Length: 310
Image (cartoon, rainbow, N blue to C red; front, side, top):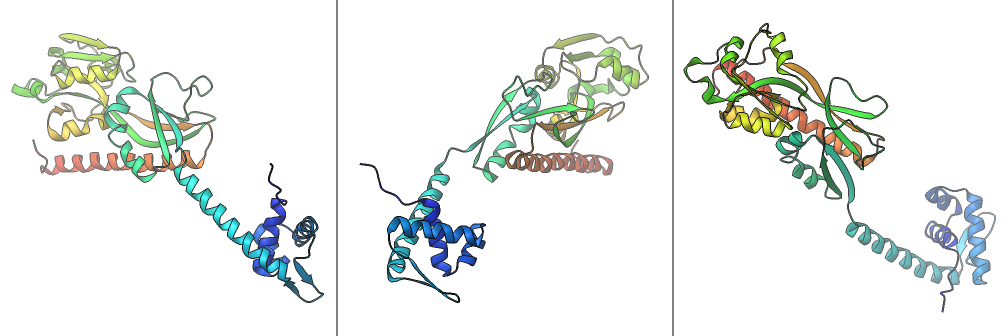
């Protein structure tokens, strides 16, 4: 048997008017007009077949029936509000789909993402990786992270970290003064990868040694494998400094020529629309990017002052 329920908008209007004993104050609370409250209360009285208020030119008062009904209705709405809040607390978290380059995701983002999830447990991060051009129409992601010179036109883009692309290698390759100046790269293996934003030929040109012929070369599809080859001491690779700063601080990798001929660009987070969830992630990403840049700046200062570990 179907429940016989009164109009719920009329219930809300009556409950607010009864608490305030005022149609005017109820109207302000519900963001409607005085007349709208009066009409809804009248509709409820007709549905119940009994007056709930005594009206006069100067005063509004609940009838006995209205007072009893108000107590029941207020209790009912309070229980409904509590039950609804409980369900919201148990609801499935909002999903935020992030797409980022593989090496960036593995070496920078993944180690930090737990911090965002502790701050916002209501947001579920779903991470995929790609180096393909951003295409929100054909791919299922909400935010795409990419390194670039300029923000994507037509999108909500947030720069969050400056990228310096520099040559790095295992510390052992510096033994015996084998690599003091760019021309010494003629005795090294140069490592490259298909997705690199800065080629060795470009770097050598910028370093004024365009005629260098290296001893050998290694080429990989992804930056991750090229970087691992450098970690294993197989040669020198051009990579973003922020991805290897921890390895450099611990001494497993080094920058043989400092930031000579480094290429600079920005890392951007890009979205189609600005939503509260996107804005929350952007805010966190910007803070993490600044923390990374500050760590690199502190390390650079310690090197200049001679306080860093060799």
